[in-house]
Length: 300
Length: 300
Image 1 (cartoon, chains in turn green, blue):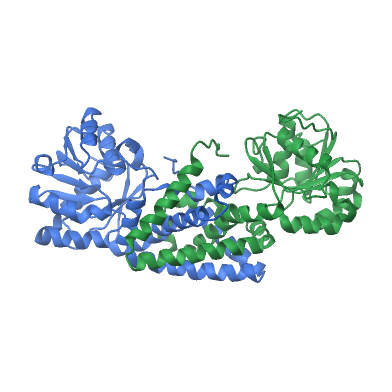
Image 2 (cartoon, chains in turn green, red):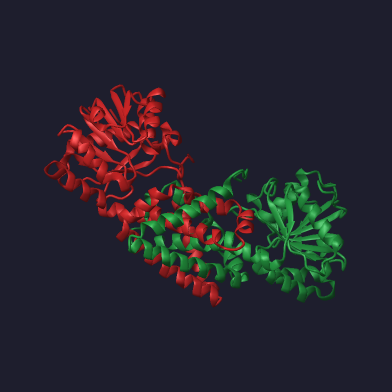
């Protein structure tokens, strides 16, 4: 039983995708003492063997049918670009009453795909997104504490069964996460601003500098500020291409807002408008200091 | 004697400005066993008293005349916006043969100001810039190891006396830094790209988000990637206004390049040009991973 009383009654849990997120869910459930059956599906047969050898799952396979047939709770933890296809594969072999959840970084597109795949049984799908992760990826990048004290956002709709939301909530609470719910649209707007836009800016900045003639010199004299600013540009390119494209409209909205603001800052620099510059920098510092105040976010 | 043979022969060293950088220089020299006379000038009388009480300097005052009269090596460690005025104050009271160096983040403007203030004795001025620092500021933010294994860039000109460069080099080597030299213009181009532009982007992003209606929600759901990406937006606004304005032309050049690239990325997102997106993200990841590979930069 978790802190707020949600109980994970599902005894057979399956994870589809054993990368950073899926692998960390398995590690975390094991570490938390989950004693039901835990299985995994991964397209990578070496990962399947290693996940079993490491004791992360009781069984794993490249073939969903054998693994998913009796699962009560299925977590789809694949890159968002693969979600639709994987969901179709899951639905084809899973029990008709299996609860299904996901971990994708955008939710409106996922919800539409789930509606198409699940039809009348959409009530058993609970869209989810753990706000955690690192710039690394893969089974070996995972660790049991990845979700501890992190937020997990669920975006159930009116049709979603309360029982399904409770099971997914209990799952994440087992992993130490704080679970909140909001609409899919609100999720996508917020994540476009705090995650997808920063990734686009970091990738673009590093690419801009990497294509300059002085690239060697530039990187040679970069310091800690640059390293932290660009850390997210070491994230997996294909994953982030998919995330960006899956959240197009909200991302473009906040990107356009940022580009307009940046143009104004450019003009302030060009015209030595020191007052405007210091006003903007001060608003930013205050907001950022407020954001970090009292936070205890252990670096992974 | 330092690693490459430069010897700090100056026995009377004065630091003008006892903030993060000046205070850390004092701490570092003490920690390294410098046994000459170390004095400080600061506009903040409480800092002057505390610097002496903490044993960082042998004497400190708000009045440069008493402190600087017999100094052989003077380090001007004030925000770049104050440099010209402080240099004039220093020149008015210092020995005519005192070696003068600075720590400003841009160098062409500093060099022009020094030329105006020093005239024929410009040969004793060694422009310098330690590539280190944190988003914090002030005497209490300093620490002895701030410059250890960090780069310090000196930008001497043809007129600069070799003896002066050697003394400033030896000073930084005492503090554990790696000293390199380049032209002031090259320094400013490189720093615009790796430091000044990232600061402008981080400040602008946080300000953009802080002025959105959902600001509370946005910051509530921000995670580690956002925290690292925006760390430099917690830097001192007035300091960075001055840095940005002091390096206008190089900064605008790289900012315009970035804005053009960002517009292209925006179009790629809008038109679902996945190939172009993944190509850019991949170039960035490769460049960034190469930049971090083998680096041992302890977080301050």
